[in-house]
Image (cartoon, rainbow, N blue to C red; front, side, top):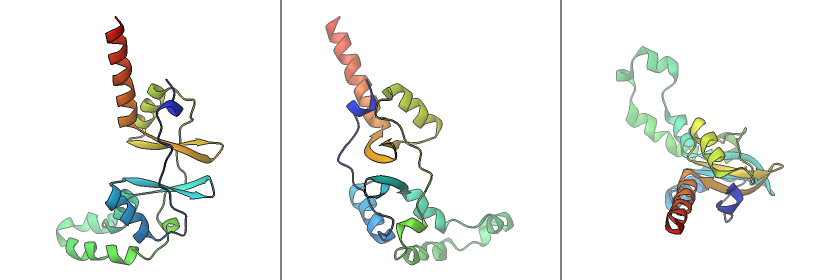
Length: 151
């Protein structure tokens, strides 16, 4: 079974000039951990919760001095200043993808090795779908049930 047989094709996307506020709203409303960023059909990035929240993390040099002196309440207030920025300022630009004709277990290994729970499916730079570890697990489970019932 290949990725194209189980991937989601109806994908919510944003453009590089979409505000972080709009992208974060979609993430919170629909419980997306990340959203592909496209120009036309071309995948140009991915904006993830981690990309937004990492801007609130203390700088390494501050953490080295002492985490006890960092005012995390004040750091959290900085979140609102990110909302007016375009997604292009925070998104990951070198996005790893899988191919539609890749076997699903090979995609799962690739995702696990990169610690991804979901990944874009692309063909020559064009976004054609998304696949998650949950999609893969569900497909393998159903395939296993069918073969067990056939025996």
